[in-house]
Length: 201
Image (cartoon, rainbow, N blue to C red; front, side, top):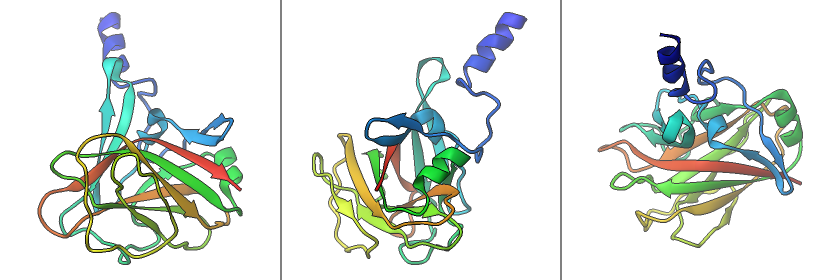
């Protein structure tokens, strides 16, 4: 019986009692800070998104998938508390507060239901603008500042690629918020994120 319980707990990954929304600690790297899939697995969706944690052998998290529900908010419509939020532990939040931050997402489109863009912002003491980027073609990383979406977007359904966002200084950072952007109606359009790295300036 004890062995069976152990196998069941292992199937939930290395942190079986963690709850979505629990603060996560970024790993320190030579380039800055990094959120591994195990940290991304603690993301908590708002009312407009659905999330799914992709798990590999033994229940280890390998990526986070999130999608906007049909009729969910689009560019320019989201409020300060909207989005899929990843709460940050105190030391990680302090390292990102009050300075410009370069945030790089490693992504893969979801075949047949790919969002056309992603929006990112740091959640702090005061509202900050969303940085928005269309999902690029393979091997075409791009840096974006908060902007509006162009109506045309060509999306490849394969190949991992990265998007780098230039985020403005945010006071008293508490979390990172993500949104999938897609045309209203139809399926849940989303994206898969396997890693997020930060480089504070």
